[in-house]
Length: 120
Image (cartoon, rainbow, N blue to C red; front, side, top):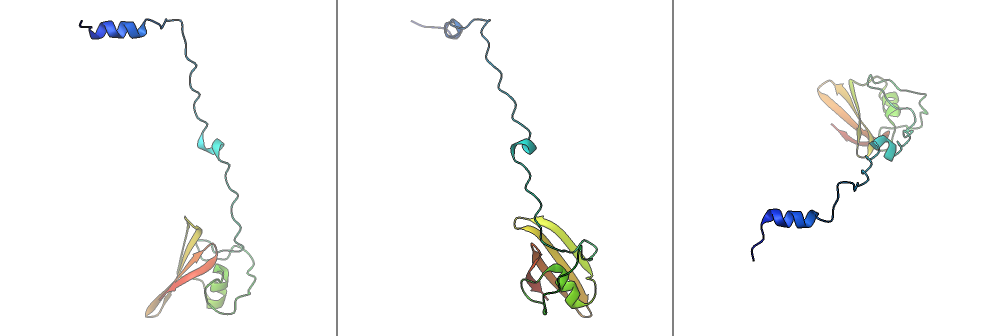
């Protein structure tokens, strides 16, 4: 016995009626409602894009080395940087501070207001 496709379709739909309704699926909430925004991390006084410190520098560092703050670097150098790039990365606040010296350049990399590395 051979059964045609329309006959199978009608047999499958035989139990359904036009009056049956399915509840609509609610739309998901917007992303901002799902996860609350984390509060901005406090790193203490940091540099703005112009190279100025955003607060009072505690002045605890006595030498340029790993772990010092952005404002401590400027205080120890004694002059504003040539350029400052501020951004957000996977680790948090990431800042690059450039000092163009005669004949050389020094690039200081900060992560969350702590000196991570120096490229000379």
